[in-house]
Image 1 (cartoon, rainbow, N blue to C red):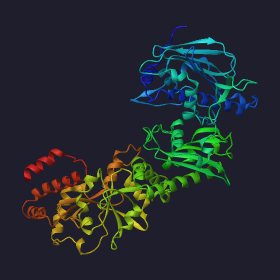
Image 2: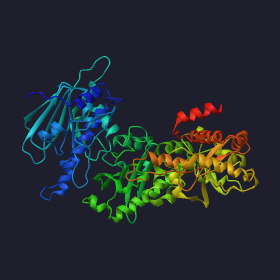
Image 3: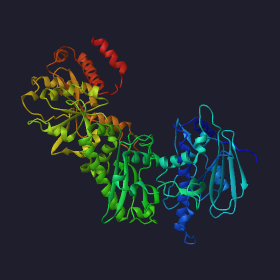
Image 4: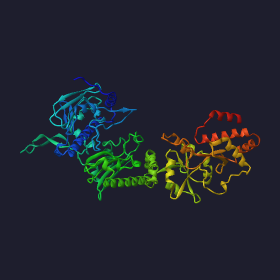
Length: 625
């Protein structure tokens, strides 16, 4: 049969794999065993859902067979097997933008979503094998096929004989060299150790014939060798073990084994509950945001099991969106194996578990915030935006759950602080929680609008994420304290320092400036907050300047064309510029118009906004100079 060529994406991946995407070559065995386990999962599910099939637990196992003489290592399973077409198609893998999207291609119906029989892990076999042969027979079929490849030069698929359904992966192990020892992958004792290290929690027996010694019958000192089938793995799922039996390394190994992530998780949570609904759960908080987390392709959810049997790969109903970063699984004997996507939303037992898990995750995060502040700040740097989105969405339904978890950079502490920490430090005469919005902490620390707040000694929270102010608008108050933007037209500070000193006649000057600027501003007035800066912008209403920038940048269908903040130009009447404005009003109104435009444009630049006509602005500055 003519040799077929790998898809270009697969060839690229195969080249990378042979040159070791994985740090350790021994990882290939874990990947092949995981693939075999997934194939049995599918077959297992088929038996459970087809009344005509008779289920026998002993029929499901994985076998490892090393052959030192022929230098072959075989990993066999009694799973669902593959047809000729599936052998051909399942070896495709997608590579894009330098990152590989490990796509699960073979999805079962009824919400079952198990990892494909051959994912990226299959290619790891070529790190240790000079040739790979796959012999497979599909469940219910009378035909078997052999897939064979020696690497990037392509592969062949030919008919063959195989008695039972399932798959055999046969590796022709490379000869050892001075630099690489491949013989270890033919050593039964080393293989046994690798299984215990990487695949101990696989729920199906992993068998291998092991050489042993015993006394010959009737002899006192004469020994003989014999072979015995041995199960290499414990098969006890980690989540069913007592916490006292497990170490941190066990949880981390399971995390990598289940492909929840490749780095060490930030935190793990082991839950064992008996009661109205009994369940076990192991949850992980990743150390960093998945590359596709903020895309439509990301799928949140926990693995769902019933008595150790997987019901579905991603049960999104177990996690709210704001905790969608959590990885892990839930196992309960109270869940029905036949539960479907349509039934999930109405399943009271599942809703109960979801509620309890939500409470547990929040509790663990609060404990981390209190006792492991540095760890929490690492977590918040990665997932804080998700929590703030959680406050903003669903009309603030979840704000009580999340308000104690969010943090913002503090002008006083020079680091992120919680709202509770801010309120606990508020001065006796302070009525509001003050905040500033902008692109960076450095920019916000220099805002003219902060002068009066800083003069009062009040702490300011810096909002540098586009969602921050939207979330706070939904939150409205925290511990009965209202949030106040330092650019608000009414800072609600009170006291004699609030009063700007100017004569009644100067109101005409501001009216003229307002007329010169037209609808660019709602009002021009003397500032109650500026100390040293000549000018700033304030706002009225619900839309701030930063919110205007965000809303205008969003691709919202049918959004109003005139979304804008009600801007107020404030002039510092104690600054020398004010004297020049008064002189221009008295002697040169055209010059005052130029002053008005220049000051307004300077205020826009301070806020990080663009100038409508930079050429005119430059000309006005040149003329005034």
